[in-house]
Length: 208
Image (cartoon, rainbow, N blue to C red; front, side, top):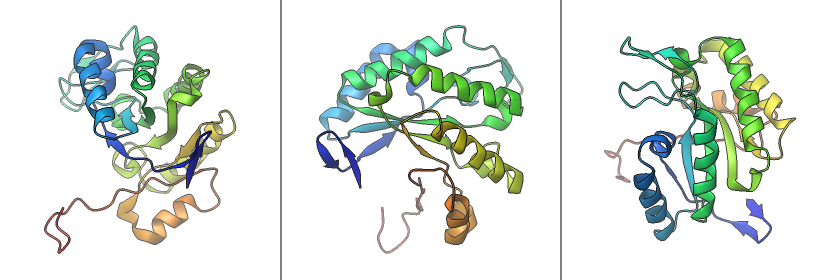
């Protein structure tokens, strides 16, 4: 179970993929959304530190998006990142930061990815209480970490983070590998918890 200074608690979260973009371009909307989540009983939000969706990019570095457009890096990226964490905390929520998403477009090189990990560590320092946990990648097999080398890189990044922050660290949900694949990904790793994406199929007997 998860515990903080007040004891065990149930983490109830919502994925808010555009949170960091809203921090930069629509702060009032971000504030309203966080207030709504808090009012409805959520206690954390899952946010992405990058994404290449055309017209909705989050850009820690310059890159060519999936539509072929060159996207310049946000010069104030890390300020917006810190502001987001602070605003989440002001609403009594915590953040789950998913570090790599669309990384095959946004940040393909290992050197750039390593630099981004260092940036994450530097910019959560002093704000550890604002976070529930870090997640290295979103559904990593389709977000820049395919195959055996991708798994090795994920585990190495997890180890790197875990050795340098007290914030809990998860790897990813590689659920396409099945249960044993997920177990193999996490077994013997430095991860503190696993983030597993269950089926979104609403046609099952259980419905939604």
